[in-house]
Image (cartoon, rainbow over all chains, first blue to last red; front, side, top):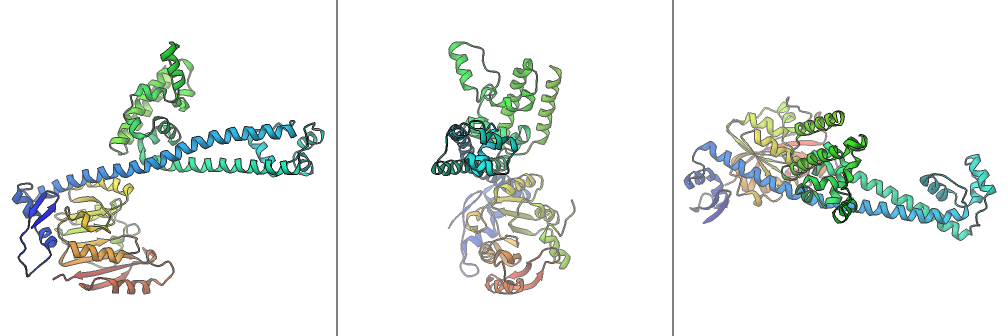
Length: 298
Length: 178
C-alpha cells in the first residue's frame, strides 16, 4: 500500500498479524525505505537531509504567519493615521466653537480640551480652583453666552476627542510593540515609529523590500516628487525619513547625502527582514557606525 | 550554557529522578519552544535525533536558527494536536517528551503515542495542572488526568516538580502498544 513520506511515496507491505497499523509499520522503516530509494544512502545523510527539508518548510510557514501578523499591524497603522487626522480636524471644530464663548482663553490645545471637558462654561471656570489669570479672563470675557444644552454638548465632544486620542496612543503602543517581531532589523536600526510610517506609506514590508532605495528616500514626499517630475523644480531630498535624527539634526547641506545613505541601508535591511527574518546585529552596528561617521565628516 | 532546573522542566525532573537516556534515543519533543531544553538534550542524545514540534512562530524562528547548528534537532512547525500532519516527517520514536501548557495535554500525548511511540517506548509528560483547572488542587487534577491516559501506558512514576516549578507534575510512563 502507498504511504506518503517526506522523501516521496513508498510502497508498504502489510503482513497482517503483528502490527496492523500501516502507518506505524511504515514509520518503523523510514530510514530503510529512504536508503532503498537511494535518497539517504548513509545513516547520517537521512537526518541531515530531513533537517534541511524541515528547516525550509518551517521557514516558509514562519513567513506566512509573519505576513498574516503584518496585515493586522498594517491595519492598525492605517487606522492610527486616519484617527490622527480625524481627531485633529474635530478638535479644531471644537476649539472654534468654544472660542465664540471664551475667546480669551489662550491655552495649548490639549489644555483647552481638558478645561472644556472638566468645566465647560465660563461660569463654572470662575467657580473652579483654576489659575487666577484664567478666572480673571473668564470674568472679563466678552464671548457669547452658552446655553446649558450647548455646554453639555461641548463637554461631551471634548471628552470624546480625548478618548480618541487615548485610542490613538493605544494603537501606537500596539504597533510599536509588534512591529519589531516582523521587522527585527529595521526596527532596531531606525526605531519602530519610523518603521511604522514607512510601512504604511509603502503598503507593507513586501513592497518596501522590493523598492529601490531612491524611492524609499522620498516616500512621504510624493507631492514634491511629482512637482519635480512634471515641472522640473528641484527634487525632494527626503520624505518621511527626515524624521530620523541623523537627518533632521544635521546641517542642511549634508541632509540630502545622508538621506541617500540612510535610504540605501533601509532598503537592505527591509530585504533582510522580508526574506530571512534573522536578526543581524552585526549589520546594524556596521550601518549605524557608517551613518555616524558621515554625520561628522561632511 | 548551564542547564538550569529553574528554566527547564527536563532538568528539574532529572534532579529528582535518574532515568536512562541512551545516546541513540529517538525523541519526539512536543512543545519545544525556542529550543533551550532541546539544545541540552541534543548533546545527551548525540547519536539519536530530536523531532522538535512547536506551533508558535516566534519561538519557532529561534528553534530553526538553533537547529542549523545542531546536527540532530529537526524543527517541525506543526500543531501537536494534529499529529497526522507531521507523519511524513517523523519516524517511530523511543521517547516522547511533552511540555505543552494546554487543557488537553493528555489527549495530545495519547494521540502522538498512538502514531509515533514504539512498543516499549517512554512518555515523559510535564503536566501543567493550572492549564487544566485554575483552582483545583494539583494532586486531584493529576490523578484525574492520569486516568485519562491511554490504557496502553504503564505508569512508572509520578513526581511533583517543586520547588523548581509550582503546579507541575511529571508523569513517566511506558508504552505497551501491541
